[in-house]
Image (cartoon, rainbow, N blue to C red; front, side, top):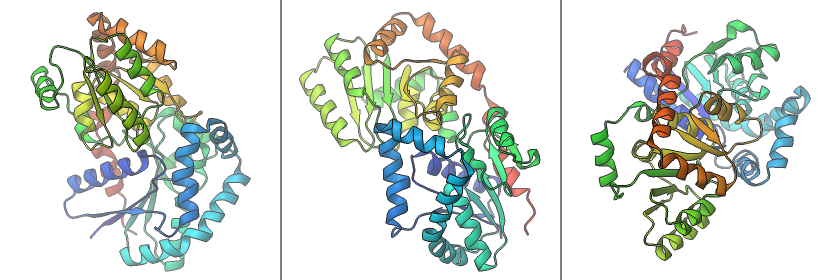
Length: 380
């Protein structure tokens, strides 16, 4: 039996979410395969978890200068070599034990920092499965993804392919395939289904809906945008997903209490993001790959208010240069653009038309292609 082990890290939500999409695609493509998700850091790897999970989240959201420095250093092989070797010292024993027990025929890595530790653990166990890497950043992928050139890489764009080849990855190792996007976002609801969702979630059916969401930590500046909506008696409903940001959630619950005229819906961490995206007219979000492509795949235009230095630059450019959305940073300007768009339905429809032309249906977002690519590899 084929046994795929998908190794991810919790640095941001995108790595694990893409691994979960691939798991589902593999199981749908072949019901006989076994697929296991494995966090590359054990619960006792406190240092690695601090740096790659808590540290990544904090620096990318609140200390952009520090994150920018780290990103730039990642372009140097000496920095990558030192960092990855330190990770191997800490993680290899844990991975060695886990992979010995799981005995995979295929391993797929969803984070550059864990690929070489996985390879070392497998070699020490005398295991020789297929190894593939999914470079989770679609466009401006950090060069660190391509440090180990012995693997097959699943990438999402010609732009990422150029970065890899500039880093001397053999072209035959690079495979451009659709972004691993949950199929719930690829389902386009009818007008009747949108109305049903709005009713189910308690939205005013006579108002358009704006969604503010920014991944696990919420959208930076969301409270200022909501305050502007309340101050100006916005004639649209607002849904805000705060994720793990309890402070933001508390602030917005207070705004909701003090401004009952605003149709405001505040959520913490949700497992129904696809429903909120489907029922909205416009989304305001960060530039993460999942956030941007989930909105676009659902056929909705977006405003990107923030992106992580260089790493998410390509995601923002992809949406803006194709007429699918805007990049606006100041809350006052975001609110003004929302008022402009929602007072002129023709603008929104034009944006939606651009989104449809950009994303389309079928082959361009068919994640089963990645499953078939991996399943077609011969077992060693």
